[in-house]
Length: 102
Image (tube, rainbow, N blue to C red; front, side, top):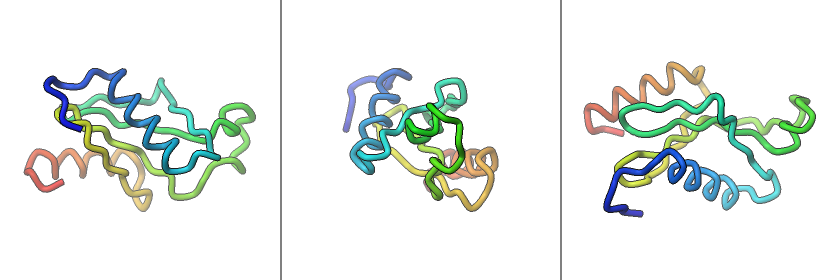
């Protein structure tokens, strides 16, 4: 995707939702809107299967579901690792983005 303008949050969220749906349609992922982080590079979306949203039962979470970055300039996406907590993972991505090595 190569938009001629910087993406809006709504456009970035639509990209995130489509990617999540395409990757695991049965999970019916939803985004935690109140946890979305906006950074210079774009947005970081946190998500979980709809069943978790409905029940709040952790058994419906899917191991390995890490935060999803959507870049503001071109709509490119990156999944962040789950091997570190989300805040350090975002900080590391931002550091790499600023240096051009993401």
